[in-house]
Amino acid sequence: MTPIIERIELADTETRARIVAPLAEFATAKNFAFAPRFITFVLKDGDDVDGGLIAQIYWDWMWIEILAVPERWRGRGLGRALVERAETVAREDGCTGVWVDTYSFQSPGFYAAMGYRPFGRLPNYPKGEERLFFAKLFAENEPNRPEKAA
Image (cartoon, rainbow, N blue to C red; front, side, top):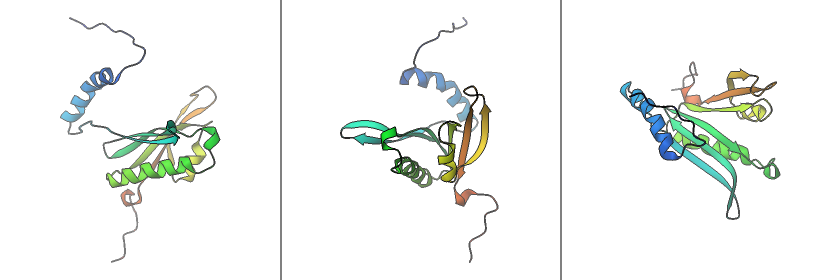
């Protein structure tokens, strides 16, 4: 029997896990177990969460999925602090580096100032703008780095 294709509005955690399972099985068979570890830092205003950072670590890299600082809190170094905290976790976990995507109308200058370098772009996403991909390779993982003095 051939399965039907059905559109749903939003996959809950269990549905998402069942969708990802065949990819995880295939990757595991190739000796690349897919077991993302989720990292979350929140900004709290009293008892309420108001922005923060969501990242995943898998295959020796951290991917910053979301970085959000409310407009009223910008300019206080909170975005930088969130990314630096995430980078610390990535280093402690032995990651090669961190990658992130953003948009030409959002924060490419922010990531460039933090040492992230562009590695890809998707034009007209949204129309007239670009989706930009940045990565930061940790110094100890950079090719052709000078050897430490003995």
